[in-house]
Image (cartoon, rainbow, N blue to C red; front, side):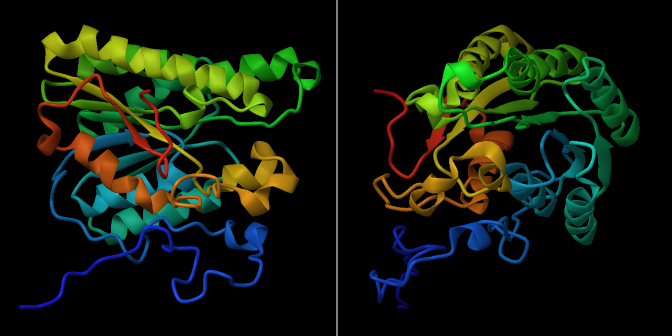
Length: 295
């Protein structure tokens, strides 16, 4: 009988189990290329012939989810912010290499016409729609409410939560029974940081939206769930998403003493989208490295 394949979660992607006292990592360089499963994710036909729209799909969590879904058999409409075409094209190539269709949709959710056009183009390209992954987000760190412009607050709410209302409103007439909607909320909804005042507020709203929407759509046979990531290495963190002096310790105060990688969330999205989760709705799943989201 062979030995089990076990992995110590404390040392995945970041630390060396044989040398916990390794030299200081250059986090800015290391985090710029997070693990999204390009070489490692292996599918098991859990989403065969699904027709999926993923927002914020060019990098980070959205990228990892798109790659995983394609390898599980889904066709993917990739929403991304205009100007990020190179990254989106890389994801599209991964999808097509898996033998699935990719549709590129560059839209800015600060434009209130964008959600309706996204849904319409996805349905037209794929002949339908059955899975929504609502993941796009704006996150900008500010030390004080006095330094946040009201325009930024409006933009954060428009991108993070108002776009979800608009996308779902447009999508519901196209979603057959058995469809799945998955939102991305955050640990920030439960344990907010003072420098993410507007972002954390939207993530809290997303959690409430998710559970309430699940109640509304249950009689249509549509499941709605959310995922609350903790500290995850994404390009968002390297822009204005984190204070620069905090990057070297990003995620190290969680139980597993490290930040997570986008790849570590993808299987949870796959589960919630798949028929394996047929009795799961109105739930928020924490992928936080150990931080509680339900106490």
